[in-house]
Structure formats: C-alpha cells, structure tokens
Image 1 (spheres, rainbow, N blue to C red):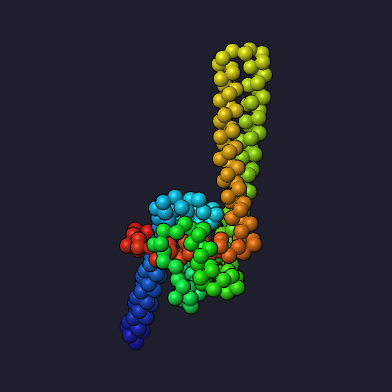
Image 2 (image 1 turned 90 degrees about the vertical axis):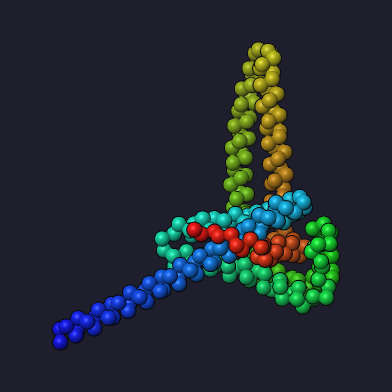
Length: 260
C-alpha cells in the first residue's frame, strides 16, 4: 500500500511539473511574441521619422510621435529584464491594447469611407494630405467621435510629453542661470582688462547661449503646440498621430527579433 501511495504521489507531482513547465513555456512564448510586436511598432515609427524626406520632421505631430516611440522603447527595455514574466507580459499587453484601441476605430472609419481613401504614395505633403483626407472621409463630425474613442492613448502620451517638457524647462532655466553668472563674470573681466582674449571669451559665451536659446525656443514651441492640439482635440493633429501609429503597426520589420 505504501508503495502504491508513493507511486500515486509521484505521478501527481510529475504531472504537475509537466503542466507548470508547459505553462512557463507558453508564457515565455507569448511574452516573446508580444515583445517582438511592440518592437516592430517602435521600428516602424523610427523608419517614418528617418525616411520621410524630412516631412515628418516638420509636422506638428512630431513631438507626440517621438514621445510615444520613447515610451514604447522604455517599456521594451524594462520588461525584457523583469524576472516576473507575468508582470512583464501584463505591461506589454497593456501597451498592445492601447495601440489596438487607437488603430481599430481608425481602420473601421477608413474602411467605411474606402471609396474616398487617399493614396499614400500621392506625394502630397503631410498637412495637405491630412486636410484633404478629412474632407474626403466625411468631414469632422464622425472624426470627433473617433478622436474621443482613441483619447486614452493620446492623453497618456500627452501627459508623458507634458512631464518631459516641464523637466526640460527646469533644465533650461538652470543653464540660463549658469550662463548669466558666467556672462556677468566675463563682462566684469572685460571691463577690468579689455584684452582680446577677454573680449573673445565674452563673445563666445554670448553666441553659445544665443544658439542654445534659439534651439530651445523652437523645440519648446513645437512641444507646447502639440500639447495644445491634444487638449483641443484638433482633428488634423489627431488624424496625423493615428495614421502614423497605424502605419507603424503594418511596418515590414516583423522579422526583427527584439528578444534573444
């Protein structure tokens, strides 16, 4: 009886171990598949920013796309090193669901107006394409509903962008304060001794910070404009964001392996 009982327990333990191993393998497979999928979206966004003949670099939606790409990249980096694969899979699933919520109504909306769908290779500039597409795809009324349905991902990305902008503003202010101190000291030095090295040092400091200020002003204006567009649910802006994310999901880089 003891031998039979021991054998019975051993069978149960062996079965449990096999089930656990299979579940672990299934979890690992699901994690890798989803990791590669999100990685492909990141690659798709990167390709748009890199190979769009400079068009996307001038687009109002650029700050949001960069923020969204970086957010996805952080998720990929965080989850690949997480020991708890259940938690890692949950994070990737959340990202995937957010993207699906964004592009599914977009696909449905475009499909409903397929006869007016704009050819993506027409060569029209992004803003002209967006404006024309909105006219041809039935105007703003139905699109406002679409923007509302997809608002979660937009708002999350905008919140992340707003946080980053706030940090950048503080960093720029610190650089400005440091510059003003150096500039003040150089001006005093130039007054005391108006030598060429002192004058050159003063000029370099002024030119250096002027370039930094100009670059920051342009960057700040673009980011602030993007945040304002999200708050106002600007249809042109929302359409451009949704279209870019959609195009990234159909990127051909699916063969690239994000997880070794």
